[in-house]
Image (cartoon, rainbow over all chains, first blue to last red; front, side):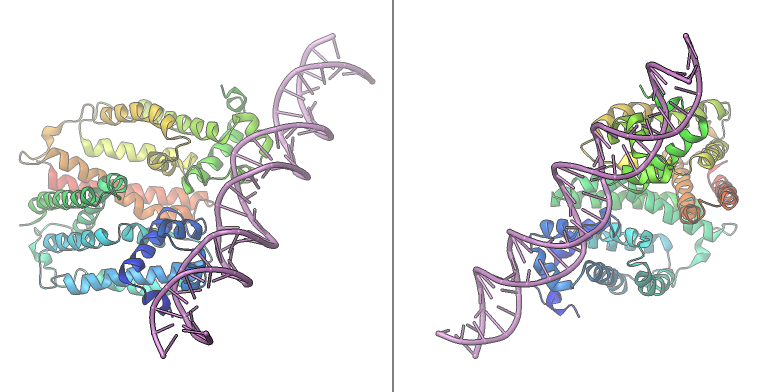
Length: 211
Length: 211
DNA sequence: ATACACATTGACCACAGTGGTCAATGTGTA
DNA sequence: TACACATTGACCACTGTGGTCAATGTGTAT
C-alpha cells in the first residue's frame, strides 16, 4: 500500500514521520498543514502526495505506523514476568522515553488522535484504534500481583493514582522538552531526569501503598 | 478602556465572553477565528471590533477578565481558616465548578493561555500572568496545617499527588462535559458527579497520608 | 417632529494559506 | 542511448483571515 514510502532509507523515512508527527500533534487534523510538513521534512509537496495520495491517507497511515511501533516496543522489551506494578511502570516509562529519543512527538500525537473529532477521519480512527488500544491497555497489567498492596487499599484508585502521577511528571517536563527538541543532548538529559523523578515518586507511592 | 463592552447588559456580555473562551480554548491564538466568535455569539463582525479594536486586544482582555473572575471567586468564597488540605481542595473544586456553570471553558482557556507561544501575545501574557499567577498559587496553601501528614511523608510529593489526582479526575470527565455543553442539566449533573468522585479520591489519599 | 449621537450591521477588501496537480527535470540502470 | 521512475515546485481554484466603513437602526433631548 505505502511501499513507495516504506522502501525509503531509514533516516529519510524518520525525518518525514517526525515532521508529520510534529504538525499533527500541534494542530487538529483539519488545521494541520501539509505545506508545513514538507517544509519541515525538506521534501517537495509532490513527493509527499506521491507517497500517500492525500492528507487523510498520510494521517491514517501515521496513526497505524506509530501505534505499531509502540505496541512492538511493549511486546518485545517489556518483562512480562514482573509482578510489581511500580517496576512495570518504570519499564513502561523507560520504553516510552527510548521511543521519544527517535520520535519526539509520538505520544503527543497519540494523545491528539485520541481527542480528534474531525468527521473526515474519526470513523476510520475508531475502527482501528478502539479495538487495539483497549486490548493492549488491559494486557499491560497482565501478571501484576495486586496482593502486594496493603489489604484495605482500593486497588483501582491506587492504579489511577500511579497513572496520574506519571502523567503529572511527564507534563511537568513537557515544556522544557519542547524547548530543547533541537539539542539532542539536552533533550536526552531531560528524559533521564524525568525518568529519575518518576522513579522517586514511585518509591514515595510504594511506601504508602505496599505492605 | 473597554467600557463600551463592560457597559453591556450581563447576559449579552457573557454570551460574547463564552463564545470567545470557546474559540480560544479550542485553537491557539494564531488559528483562532474572530469570524467564528461573532457567529457563535450572534453579533456582527463590526461590533466586536468596535468593542475591542483588534483580535489581540480581545484576547488579552479576555485573559485578564477571566483571571480576575477566578481570583475574585477564590478570595471571596474560600474559607481561609480551613487547615485541612483536602477540605481546601474540595472547596477549590467546588468554586471552579460553580464558575464552570457560567463559563464552561474558563479553565480550558487558562490552560491554553499558559501554553500559548505566539509572538503576537506571549510577551504581554507574561507581563500580566507570571506575577499574578505565581502569587495566587502560593497563597492557596496559606494556613494549611502540614503537621496533619504522617511524620515520614514528603509533603511536596504529597501535594503534587493530590494536585495530579484532581487533574486526572477532571480530565476523565472532560470529554463527557464537552459532549453535553448544550444540555445544562446533564452538564451540571456531570460536574456534581465529578466533584463527588474527586472527594472519594481525596478520602482515599487522606487515609494514606494523614496520621 | 426634528435632530443628533451613538450602537450595530454585514458586504467588502487585500491577502495568506489550503490540499492537490502536473509538466518538467533529475537520476540510476540496462 | 534510452527508458522508467523519483522528485521538484510553480500553479490552481478555493476558503478563510483580520479588519473596515458606508449604511441603517435606535433612543433621547429639544
